[in-house]
Length: 177
Length: 108
Figure 1 (tube, each protein chain N blue to C red):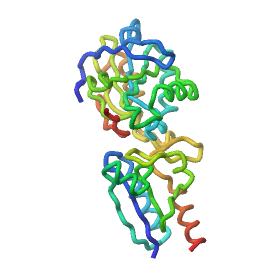
Figure 2: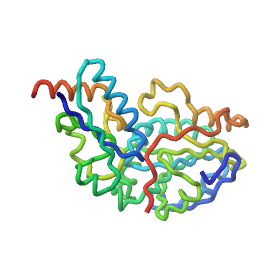
Figure 3: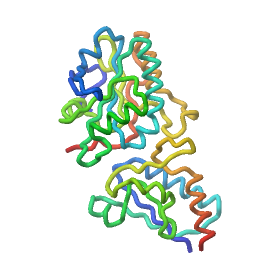
């Protein structure tokens, strides 16, 4: 990973599914925290966690946390991850957050992201406070024992460091050009 | 003896759990099988094996989720299975493996 816990937010400006560019500055303005999640359409791990990501997005955006999903996959290898398919997916699932296209893959590379989904949570000072998975059970939402991302969100909103700052990733590899 | 092909791509993390689950189901049902473990490492091999993603399990040559391969092209990726609610998941469920074994038993 390029970014380490405590490291500063790496700025980005990427095209959202509505066709308009969105920057990290736009997102972070006035936000108590910023969650950047590398994601995509085709990956079954993303699909398994997707409803939970949406639920967390709705709950914590209402509490002042900004969210952004970023897809960096090469659509030549996975056409399901192309921009038109991103637009369809965001609409079909009712994404409550921007879904951004990292066409050049520069943002994913700068962050050192390797998997989808992969969470980077920054606090109000834009310092990285949590990196890792959504929770410990992609398969069964009812059997989750460790709600890692949610606990990190609660900690950051309370001005504390999350008890666990870095968790193991389970997901598909980012498809590089 | 039953012949099972277990195809996987190492970069996708789904195969250890699928391997374990397959063995659990076989053990529980006391089924003896000859299991061939095939690692797919290139796009060419994926085409050659008609590999729609990792993991892929074939019982006597028949995919455990034949419907699931319809819209997937062959290549190196994590394969999508579905749970009872239709949600995409990376590892085949026990029920899917059990149903495939039962179906195979009837057609043998």
